[in-house]
Figure 1 (cartoon, helix red, strand yellow):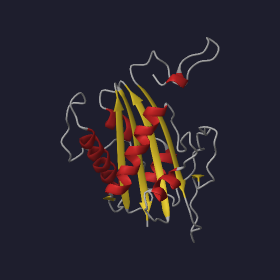
Figure 2: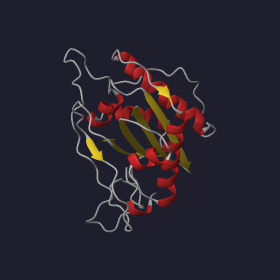
Figure 3: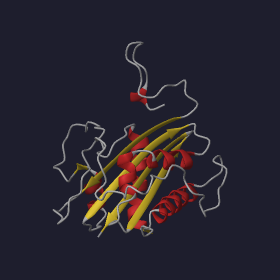
Length: 223
């Protein structure tokens, strides 16, 4: 269990109940370094001067997608089968789990007649680093304790972009963490909005595991 999620008193319940067989948290946002000619709701972070004090984790409000999904299309409620071979969670490599996330997200996009995203290794490295950092420093958010936002992490890797969106997830004791995370994102309007953004063309998925806990970061990018 992440330290700051431990129960303090009977009156102060934890965010995640230890009585549940598995637990999950989700966060999603869009970051923009420049002003675009079209409206992009859901902005929750942008490059800011670094601060010496730890950043406060803020859960963004759910907002509607940049482009409304046609009313005659119901939101996908089940995740299509992935073409990536499934490996038992106990022995699965993180690269296999990352490939499954990307494949399943792209299949969801195809079901909405959207182009699949190309994998970007540099973007995946940034995502992987953030997942590892969240595990090592016991926090969960788009801004790390040093004050670095998703935008600054991407820019720090020398990647230029017009739009970057980020979905985060943390899950513990899930029999299949990928299925739980992708389904959780899909059932959340804000996360689904990032998944179904027509303008994004590239993605990077990074997962870090410690014990039965998995930290997920997926970045979506438009150059």
